[in-house]
Image (cartoon, rainbow, N blue to C red; front, side, top):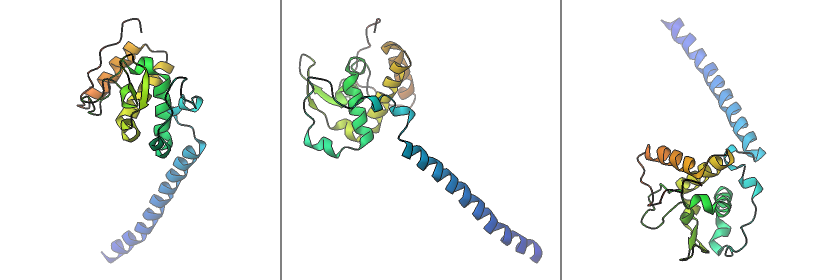
Length: 170
């Protein structure tokens, strides 16, 4: 019995070293991926660096927004046509009518008048936007993307904003 216990105790440090080595390899791999600045979810964001003409100037609070959220604001600004037909699923339905409204406020003629701070701290808003842009980059129609977004987020039990379906030709 004493021999078995001694052998077991010698194996523990070896197992710990192996686990630590695997953890170190995983951390180095993740760090290398982060350092490269490349992420499959933000490929379009890397090409968009300014807001479209006619957008209001960014408010003071926007300076403190983290980079991934700023990238989402830029994506939203450049994909208003699609996002106005895509619901958000974060629970903001009492305040917003679509995913685009999580980022920007519009007047009665749908002209963007101000930034909305909501999406700057809402990962679901950002995820929906990235899903839409990825679908557009893959050549999907807004109707196809809408169906996929609805299926994905409703499967999680989340409720959509009251967003009308896109026209069939979009």
